[in-house]
Length: 121
Image (cartoon, rainbow, N blue to C red; front, side, top):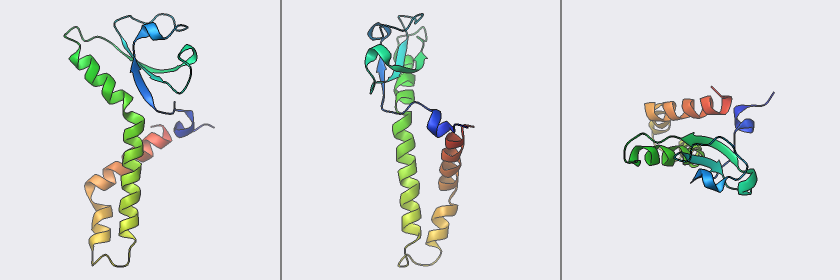
């Protein structure tokens, strides 16, 4: 059984316009496309399309930027969690600081989020 981690489209993801995808039908020309650009654009993996919000396009673009950044954000959070674990394991860290770092609600929330993403929930 494939896990979410093995099934997802790997980054980097980029924002492109539908006219750059030659072999993908039925894309709204006003949509912004999030795609993996490690592949040739003729066979690019489309991750999402972000529709025009009917305004000036600023919300559409902001949403596309956030979605396109998802693989990098996941890697950054995983790196920070690993750094906290590394620092917490040092013997020269005084007192309750190691357990305080790992029980901090932001650390716990980030670890739970990464686990949900990795499990596909």
